[in-house]
Length: 311
Image (cartoon, rainbow, N blue to C red; front, side, top):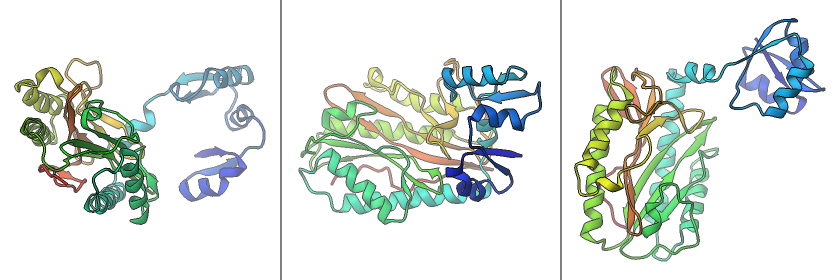
């Protein structure tokens, strides 16, 4: 198997792809493809990753070759994790969870969302992680009703809920977890929302069994919220996704009839379960764990308890 790389990445390619023959190219990438492939060969490419300009350059240089869109081939091969991958995923989730515990144990009122996010990133590196799995999301009070709100300089105040969506990276593998915590005395109505989301997450986790369809996991969590007074504020996204080298991988746990592939869960797959309620102008709650599907159920890779907690 050939691996084409330029000189900057030769050492990294040799280290990370030992089963491949590394071919270093110094000219245009299209020339390297032409040298590596026989005339008339079918060349698969990821249409979602190749720009129009790049594709036009390839097609002009490689007129004797047939190009075939091959999106999803590698991703499909990665959907079931090997034992070594599972070990790394378990490790990164544990280390990231320890970093979160470190940061929350030192929280002080008035800390801004950005300061909290930065402190968490620093703590993950102090724990030995290579970096962030994705940009940390911290949103407090009414801003938590925005599912992907990025941290701002807003101070975190008494009586608010704070949503923290974070993950670390180790050897290229990611973790993904969301917690929501209260700050001091929180209104009982917000505690009620938290309780509903926790019940919904528990239902989704219980449904994530080998042989189940991913749509069943989404439905189990979604039905809990849709039966509550907050049905109109139910999460507007798929309840889960795989985690590995990318933060969002297959299998995706979307609503039945959404048009997404409805995967059958198999041992070795990973999947998040992350329902939420987002009441605009008031608050948001999301709880997320990453699961490993096992032979007889599932294992939580993320370690932070999801019982309600106030700082």
